[in-house]
Image 1: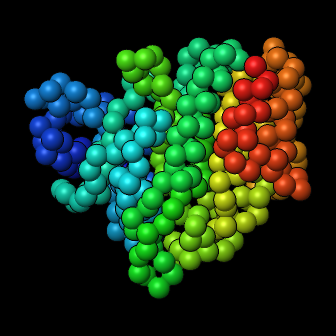
Image 2: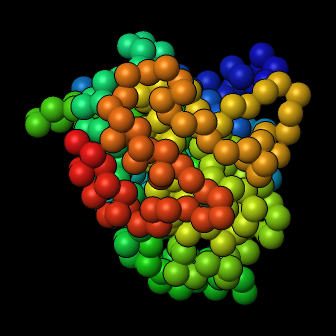
Length: 305
């Protein structure tokens, strides 16, 4: 972004923040579509996360639809293990979404700071993630966009982009809690195939945390792809690696299609053998995913303890 545009955008963020009697404290990060800012409310001194669409995309109808869909999905969800969204809208020429601030940061940053986690630490996090996913997979979604442009009530959201960067940690009264964020690629799977926001063959999501089934048939992804991604995130917490090896110059989608995950014990990390076996089973995606429901994966992990 040119310097003049950046300054103008920063000024608009300042003005937008006043809507909540807040001031921007820090820029927490930026992705392909948006940026996230930390605000501090002047009346309560509480932190607030503000996600905004980047100016370069604001005029793009497809980007607008994706951002607004994420906002709508987030506002429909309410669970201790899902990042809570408060308000969405358009002001100061900016599409925005306000969310709770998770002071522990994302799981990828956790591994950067502290290194790989112990089995007990990793499982505590992943059990929280599974609770959030199980809720989302059964939640009522008020307005799912259909192919004809109308809306209908749907049941259940598939996240479709679960990864350490989209799992955050927050301190609660009972200790550290993990929360799932960023339902921007989620869809109501009860109405799979009816939405016109994802065309057949379109690729989206993150290959390193995606099973073959999702890469081959993204539009019709079902809850099992989130279970696989949760297992992949557990693998990362324990080893610091993604399940598959991705090499420079090689198409990452071909890597997902053509290669199998590396057994976790081959990463040389001290994972209990029974836990390693369950993780390897959960990451099988040829010819199909073994654990198709959150509950089955959770039970297998509990039995491995």
